[in-house]
Image (cartoon, rainbow, N blue to C red):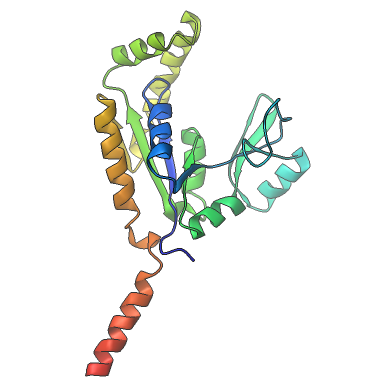
Length: 213
């Protein structure tokens, strides 16, 4: 058992609010943070490696994990299933590694409601304004005007779920938001539920006290 338990870090935001950039910076900042590898029933694409990009599974195998309660969250998208297997997540928690989840608010709800929910740290990233959110989407030059309009429409529903998260950060300055994000993670690592060794320390203190009495 590690000196601390790992966190399950869920960062959500509407597209363009900065989630991807902040997640990448967290991975660069601390090697104890790694992306959670999802399972999927879709076929591997060229260059994808099983266990690295996804755990590629049959529909029967995937459903078996769901039936046994061994899939922390799951959803079906365009006929293919995606989810987070419980086993690798538990291994990470017990080895003191934090997992970063690339999931939407619905997946976050499922993980928070799971048996491992006490290890969840959930953070919602808000844009400073809708006008700025649209500007960021346009400046990425990745999507057509139609796609941008659709993303803007979706953002309202996504933002409505902000009260469900442990922390909410307004990303009006990327560097400052990253600093606050690091501070939150460092503090949450000290949460009592994440420190299994504290019990032994208290027992030792009590034994020393009783020995002196």
